[in-house]
Length: 137
Image (cartoon, rainbow, N blue to C red; front, side, top):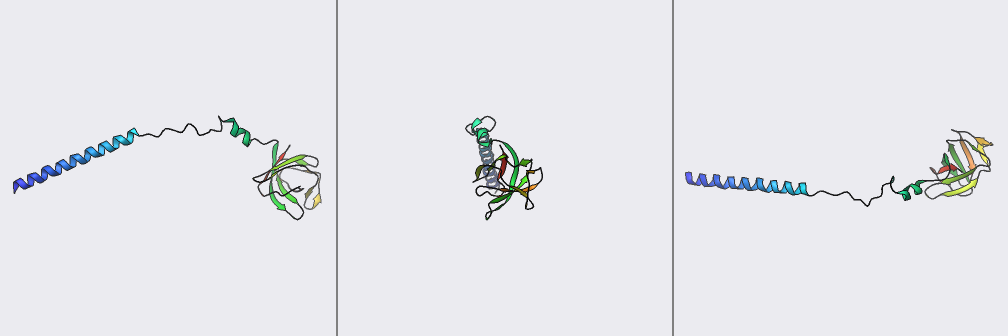
């Protein structure tokens, strides 16, 4: 009986040592495999083509908050002053319009200039959408 117990102990110690060796080998292979950073991805600071795409002529003066299709008028929340005769560019996802300001209104009353913070109505030549940006050229 004593011989059987000794054989079981020897077998169990061999199994333990094999497992620990296998684990150590697996860990070392994981350390050796490292991913290299992809150098082909463009960085906006270094790639001038990306900078040109983001550049828009003029100064941002407001955002379109609403559009009335029946009368072709847009409501603009101004961030800078706007006057009759100024040239504006309306740029959005599907919109790209350049036009001269001919009609400005505030509360259905014609005005000649709008100041920062005002919500004004502007007659537009074609459809615009909410969140389109308005630039002064």
